[in-house]
Image (cartoon, rainbow, N blue to C red; front, side, top):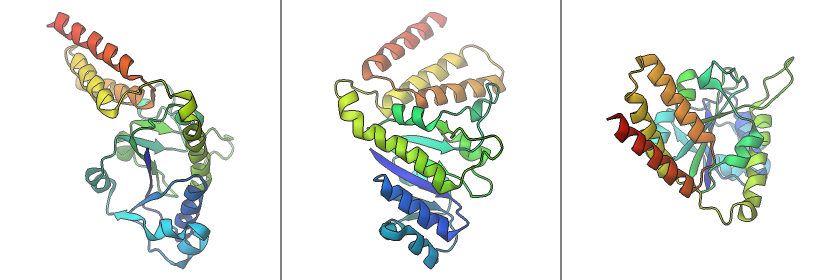
Length: 234
């Protein structure tokens, strides 16, 4: 598993350094900066013993450039504000749920948004999963590096235990999940939904598959069921 920690449009060099330091605490090595501020001395100073992560950071003009040039198989967005049941694009899972269900054999990008505004709606729409940390309602928004520490801890702990917990389970690959998503989208296309409902159904499918742990055998059965349904509709 390769985890890319993607910091979108960071405004403060010090936060870049703190994020690198947090990453090294939990064994993460791939720092990606999207349209960052200037990397001043404070970025390296705050990184402490993780200076090499800042020095080796990949820098891109925008998130789409990064995604097009790297074989990312799962995109995880982070948000300080999660949505309710009717705000589907912002339905989020907790870091603990993420740690338990992360795709350990894939290339994963975790997106952290701007210090002031977080991720845009367009960036959130790219994500397979959205994760949010439960916090006190009086002051719900965490500093990016504090939030990263919570999320990366859960991934780290899960990764340490994966050999014991999942050694005998063949996990569904990214391609298998994509095939299920495409089949479900074909099924939705046969139901004559209005465009806005069809788009919403596609989003729901993407998010459910993105946060689910599915074995290879389960993926095979799900695809078979959908294909038989499509044949009967036709």
